[in-house]
Image 1 (cartoon, helix red, strand yellow):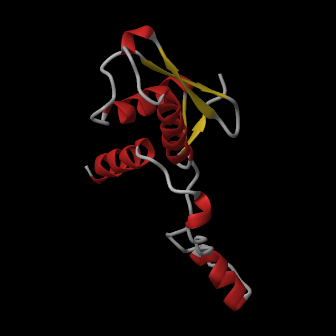
Image 2 (cartoon, rainbow, N blue to C red):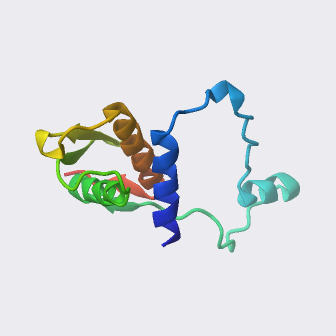
Image 3 (cartoon, one colour):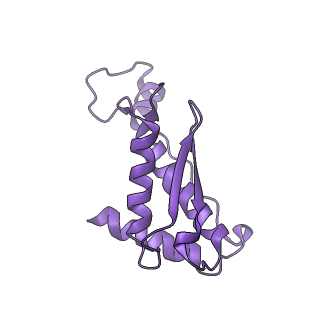
Length: 131
């Protein structure tokens, strides 16, 4: 449920007029807790539970379906006419195709940018399966 609100908020931010990235403060660099332990003690602790796990593997069709479902949660998303294609390998990408069934779409590039941002979020958790 929280993810749904986060996705809608992200979409609304993208579809509004954007601020210049030079106006935004630089994000502080985060160091993974395991790195801090290694730097402080000189040794890794294999019993740590907060070490990142391996990513799950999904097919291109499954990833595209996940992105389409996230797009559909946006209140301004048309019911038909948006088609997502996932392609690539290790660093896979997502492409939004807007078909005539979507009707007139304001700011189609912003929808494409939003699709890529959704893909970025999903890419952190899933790798593309090799067919």
